[in-house]
Length: 420
Image (tube, rainbow, N blue to C red; front, top):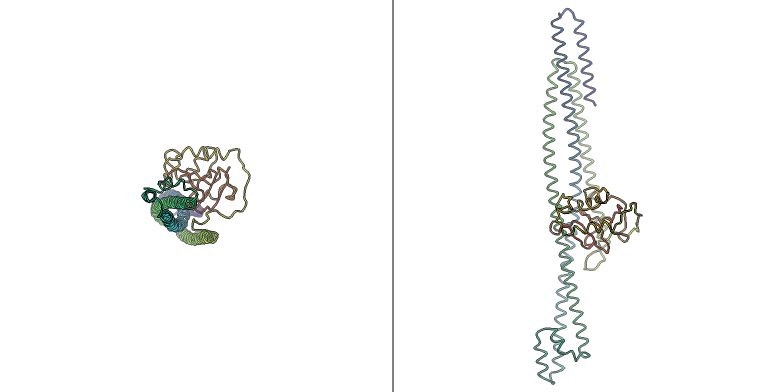
């Protein structure tokens, strides 16, 4: 290190000064001993200060790496939140359309029902009045159909059409309920991600405060080293010059690192925007039932590299359905977040995975969704789960839902990864 080289130079210069002092015998033995003692004392204090400075710098470097890592994770999380906001907006539009479809289906059912009653009145207005009154006084649609069962051939068309309309109403109502549940899951996930963002910001604030404390300690240590210039005057100038150079290099390095970080953030933002635009372009031709959340099929289907059965992994994971969601947690029984659940499930089978949904997107090998098998990882923006087969996933969804199963394509899939 530069500071270590400076220290060697300082010690060498001090020894030269000691030798020179020994040559000036006219000063007297007492003055020589006094000067040598001061040199030795100054060297010892300077070495101790150097060790303190080196220790502070190591701690600073380590802390800076932690801050950089947290910054990167925070940027990725904020991007995930933006993507999730767009998906929630799309889900709201789907729900609005489903609400309109439901109202239209209910109105059609009502119209069909009224039309059938009018036809009954018309057909029997000159017939058995008691029968007409009985039909019109029925308390429900099922009661009407039961009373006119023997006229089956006459009313077959009305019965079929009304049944179809009733089925349509039920299907649209079920779709609306499903969309609303999926929206609630995404809103809960967004809330969890925003909480994660706040926790990361708190951690960054705390670590930056620690960094400021290190800067203060470093400044005090350097000021103490500067006090030794009365004994080692020549070497003091070298120390000052080297400190200025190191400070300039550090400032330049931080400036370049900040520039690189801004460029990296801009690159990721552009990639996320392009990916979002591509997904929107792919799904623009879909009907009001919701856009396609399945990525383009590239046919990828890598071979398995372990002897572990994907179905066995799914069976193990399903045991914990119903347990709570806990942000940052890794306990399958007491609570885990999405990546913590995946990490712990696969850890049970001896497979080590990171505790990060962002990092899990690049684990293992890529698989196309059409070739997804039980045990594969299904990766979303800010979320990850285990594919259970049959278009379903199992995972820690949100604080509102906990560990549960649901439709794999309920939102946009970013990647499918095979780690077995």
